[in-house]
Length: 258
Length: 258
Image 1 (cartoon, rainbow over the protein chains, first blue to last red):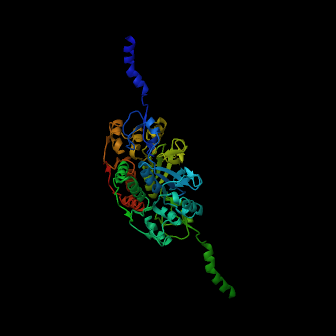
Image 2 (image 1 turned 90 degrees about the horizontal axis):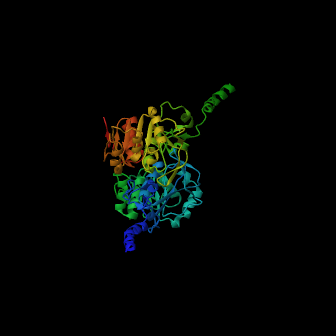
Image 3 (image 1 turned 180 degrees about the vertical axis):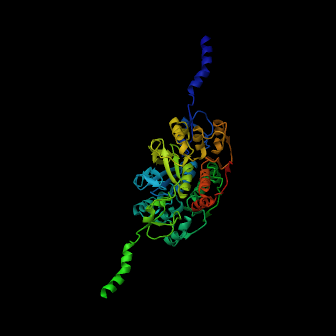
């Protein structure tokens, strides 16, 4: 009888022992800076607003395939051109990585020293190939870089250019016969470079289906939100914009060619 | 007579020989990526819209003192938090440099590997001290970093925080008794951290004279444009906004405490 009582008393303790207490909660992989923070309680991440997971849950394989984005950077790339879309795509849950011709450090905006994650020799393929403005000639006039972009064409679902990044896509022969846009001071120049295209001014972005080009510098944010809306729905894009406090976001502000 | 005719014929050639042809034109130092480009003809820089100088002119000492801005970065800093103001300040002609605790590479947004230009051991003083959100605890909870920020106080004319960068300023005791703002999900948290401050929600930025705090992530662009307007005039800020194609800029959108 004593043994039975003891067993009954111990039973709940044994049950608890089978479920070790969760020591920490973490963000689901969001690409954001909060990916590396641990929290002591379950709840909402104050940074990305996603529901926290226990560490065990995070380690389970993710079923949904993450959209991958290759950010091609180069010496003289404009800082906001790439940073706006990087912020947007990372909070949309896309996996973003940086590539340059080599892994040598490059300088953005004459200020920011960046080490690219990959070179063109070892960069993985990506769903989206993104290029940005600045000293775009560094990439556009480099036959090796252009050949490398062309070599990835079959695996690339979408191309995305911000500002004068459009010149890089034009050198890869991707803008022929399309409606496109670029930095406001480069409209005529791009028109001369791609006579078969129609280069539009005063257009925040132009979506040709596979190829999206945006206007200058800050317009990359709107183009990136448009791409998120297209791939994950308008609500997802609105959520990212709200998180970024980009209440100036106007859905459908650009031109979608149908 | 022959000698006289020869001398008269040669005279214009001698004059030309005294003025060697200008081989290249360059941007005035604008902090932008176009600072490194050479142009064969005089005119307007297609990137920053400033009037090009001959190389000789550029080498002349600049009379006007450039406003300097220290960007304090750390592991986990949010990419758009600092990239928006970096774009704005560089086109306003400010000299921006990056600093972190050490010169080791740091990762922004879990994606971008950055090498800071200076460490806290050798960073020069600056007119403006700027901090940004993300994993702000990395800086805010580091007594060495906070002591270093305090040690520069006398030389600092303005403090500028974006998003949860406000927590770093709060740890340096800079927000006491002020009206301030931060990332929308951190309003209550900052209010608890600085009970004597009034932490405002739905406010794009708050300017207390010496200390400017902005709302989250993209609000840094507006706060930076406000600071440019304050230091260089509204027209200068509008010119930067137009160059960046940030037609969503609304001057005087934040609160200026008088």
